[in-house]
Length: 406
Image (cartoon, rainbow, N blue to C red):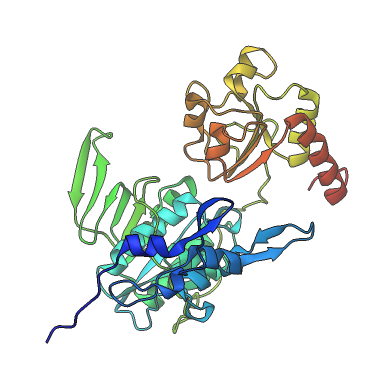
């Protein structure tokens, strides 16, 4: 026998709430509370007014305010103990290894290094493989988020012969299926030295990489070559996306490679000298501070750029006015940046200017307009006048580092 469900009578519910007041009828919501009314399915209905009342508290100024922190738990009944925990992928017993040798400029993963790990993740996920990052010491969380499974820090030496000897020892100990190196100025040289030392096949400048096939340009870039994978491969920048999946857990290596002995260096490598950021090429500068229409005090702007140890830049309007040299122009008709950080002082963000920030990792905007396009593009924004921000920034840097910057 089927159960009989009573149908709701909206007119009766409406009439039950009517009470006399001030000469006319009004609604009294407490006469028939929502919490007493059930839906046809028999479940209690929500009472938004009661939920809001429970979230009200008294602030310091004596006025009532809402405490949003308890909103989710009260409305959905989900406790904090049942919150979603971060899941890490753990590769304990891999069938093979993929060795990745990133550039790691300044001891960090840059955009090209993350793309290299994304390509290695394609090869490793084609089977039960694990990725071993070989290079300078980098924090494990960032490598795990980029898709790495193992870390093998090596001596931070600039001698190419010593680096090749260390990589040969790594390959002898791990017997990797593939070795991936970026097609950068340093990585390309290292890959060719390693191929000459090990006499293994090298596939340089790969633009499309799959688990079983690679595509690279040939014939002076007018043709494409497609074929199988090689033991040593270099990856062209901005061709393969970085790893966007779940974080991997970094586990220790069971085998530790040991170099055969000291390497007889054929050259003497001196200390690396940092270039002067004031005279550095704008396209190669890692840190750029640019001025726009909102900057009127260029003396303070130049002092800020010097205090930040950055390279000066400018928008097209500033260069057209003659306030900054044409070589400092950023944008489609100027220089396309490849910087780690870009600080825009008083720049609204025209489409032509934003085209020059295609490869910038971090953007900071200082602007009085909250809805400016540059503020939307920035990861950090300061809504204030640039003339007020620059002197304060110089004072903070002077107090932090003194008159002389490192």
